[in-house]
Image 1 (cartoon, rainbow, N blue to C red):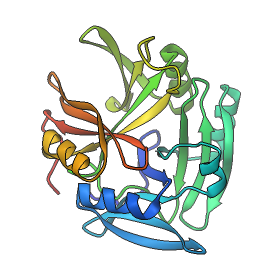
Image 2: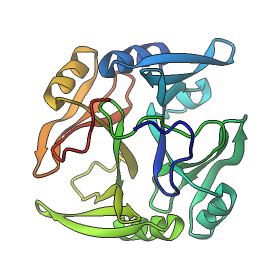
Image 3: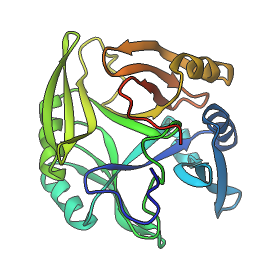
Length: 268
């Protein structure tokens, strides 16, 4: 589904951005894995903001991590953006609800307006108010962002925060020995949340995980390995949902792939 001419609805994930230790190698990995094209937009001396594209449409973006961040030990990572109608008022509300403003709100040229936040549970995320650039231009298709899932060490606190901030509704779904939280906008699921248990290593912070839709989870996981990635969670079935795998790219950024069993992904 193309979304060129209008902003994504308030409270819906609208953009995904990779900050990587090695821009050139990262671009090679993702374009080969997902059959994406790329459009390198200069942002400095030998620095680029690269639009990752499917059939000419912007899907996500990536850029080289600054040297000072890299030397301070910040890992390569994906950042998820949520669409809002009035970013300044939502950013102020986020502060009142206990979030830390890392950067912004500020304009990104004529593309839109953004703010980077650290929510009370410790997960980083961003808000986006689109202007010339609305966000991801294809949704519900193969090789595009499909789902976003919050891993929180305090799911009650995190759930309350997002519901108050964005007007999300929450629904608890029992799943194989755990409660899975669905977040909804206008009755439609837009994200999920899991509780991080004591089994999770202490050095893994709360985080938003991006899932990308693929035609064959096993085939894509194998291809990711061939391209230098590491399969952290091998292809695993989730009854009535689909088959997923968690992958670390060669530069250390973590993401997931999903083959949906719900008939909600088009080839595009």
